[in-house]
Amino acid sequence: EPEDKQGAKVPSEGITKVNKTTILERNLTTAGILVEANHVNISDCIIEDCQLSIVLRKAENCSVENCKINAKKLPKTIGLGIYGSKAVRILNCNISFCSIGLDAMWIDFLEISRNNLFSNLYAGISLQISSNCTVHHNTIYGSKTGAGVRGECKNVLFYDNNFIGNEISAVDYCNATWDNGVVGNYWDDYNGTDTNGDGIGDEPYVIPGLMIARDYHPLMKKVNLTSPISITISYPEEGSTVFGVIKVKGYATCKEGIKEVSVRIDNGSWIRANGTSEWSVEIDVSKYDQGKHTLEVRAISNDNKFASTKIDLWIKKKSTPSPSLIICILAILFITLLLRKKKR
Image (tube, rainbow, N blue to C red; front, side, top):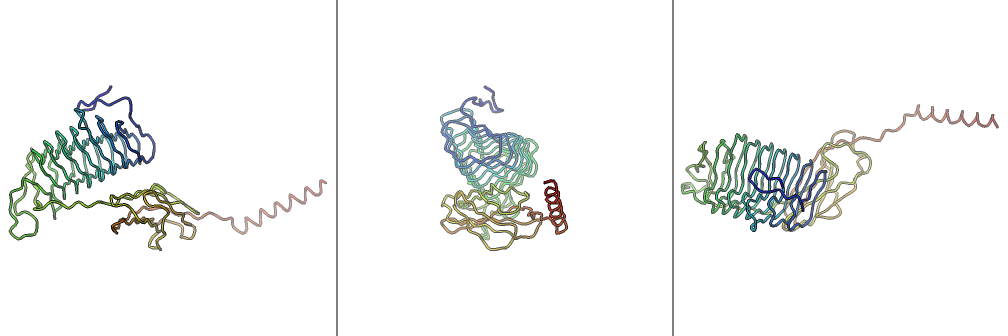
């Protein structure tokens, strides 16, 4: 069996290999998921006791949402590995008891948001040789190192995260940014003061490592992480061309549950979709002008929170023959009929 860079063996059996555009929604107990494709969404998976639970390799425009990963019975484990990929989102996952909770290398554009990473042995999050990474609204608890940034990373931003109960909260060897200019992160070992009571520490929090980075806006209280609403539009795709009656469809998830999904084009009236977690609605786009339009989907949770997402699409009118062409065709048909009659 092959090994990954941490020494964990890649199991040759029991792997779900995704090599086409798809959406996975299933419960898994021992099998891992390997993604080597674009536009893949993995959601609502439970993966236990797997050395490499979910791996995205050379993948683009993919997301992992609402997954639970636990590997406390095995050594040398990676909960979620992302390698050589682009435009990846990790949302609302629980990753625990792995050697490394989330391991990312050679990534361009990565968002890690609203995840719980706890009791991972060596690191909650490890970023290496990556760029344009944003890590926000996560809780990282009980690891040897909460977050590590190494190896020529560029444009890496951490803010609104909770670092709690880690031996070392974070290390930085490539000058990441640890606040967004307004708020930073909550560090349970921060000993600074807040003289004006604005919730931001007066002294910066120092992150150890080669760069001696700083969080200039450390938070005095833990970040309140509420459950997000996730919306996925599976059809049509961003930038696609449509005409006639189309069936817009997708998925919406939230811990509190979804009670309503609606769709509209541009700033028109909302059209309520059928279904909630898996929804669809038919729209006649022929009544809109030809050209570029915005399709917006809105979801409302059971506790009355709103979220929306948008894509651009191109509407094309079905071409109709010109009057002169119709006359020409009718003339040809008339002449053909006359010739047939003469032959008889």
